[in-house]
Length: 370
Ligand code: PMP
Image (cartoon, rainbow, N blue to C red; front, side, top):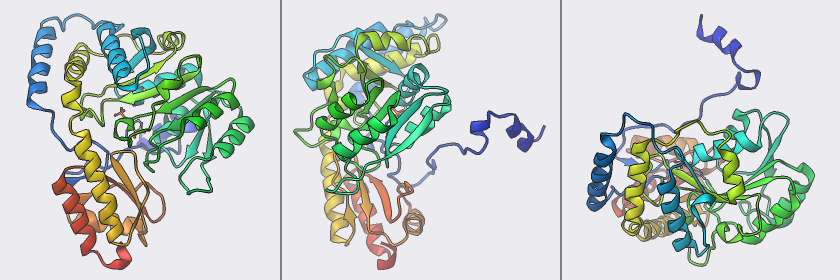
């Protein structure tokens, strides 16, 4: 059978789709997927080796299906860092927050159901929702204060109109970097009475001081879910560990859709090692925020227009042709992200040397390419 006839066997709704994925290129300066540029600290590497060593001889057995020790450690981490008291039964985890999001859409989305998000936002939200046949409604952010802020009244209006089964909010938002006020979360929750409302907080550890987590709203809101990941601030993208906090009754329902033993013993051991060293793992967050702010200042000096960011990346506007600039930067060994927003590129904040490299590369470009 040829590739094209195989495509005819595919589910109708997938037939004209292309697979998601940022280019994985071997370049000196990779600032395109919002990873941490800082390696895992040596002390943590030692604990990882010890913990993986301890489970290695038991790998003939399936892992703890309930990952109870990990859920307990994640609950303790969130309780300590957000000030919201959470217990293990409120925590759920998966292979990256993408899998956790996938569990949510499998449980609460699907054929005949609708999910609402506000574009531009994380492009996997619609892809994951549609993967189980959920109808995606592309809401508009449209705020008077700036094109990328999500306006409370507009959001409420669209939530009422759509009456969705799932709502995706993202704070700080990828790719814009903007945080969401908790008023918007509360208002959308009230305006969508049958929806599971997901607040994707993948980048929250990079937020400027005074940006509270939506975990503070969980009490009394049984349809609210806050997703997190170890891929960004924890500098642990290679491990694939994402998690969520919600009402215990909601996490219980996710057991209906997860595959048995979805978190391997090795993943659980490695994640526990990182949580044991949470402060060391998060030690580079301040340095990354400094580089983010240097990037903002540097691109502004070049006559470009950065969007204020609470994340580990900056969406930079003002390019005549973003794709041409993307290509020109790549030719200088600097890989950034063309997120498909006209005149904009997204640049991850990395090390001081990476900030200098990207600013130097931008400075060499002809003004019309900046
Ligand atoms: N949410 C957002 C907003 C993201 O940007 C990303 C990764 N780019 C994810 C979730 C998924 O991250 P992971 O699966 O690595 O946890």
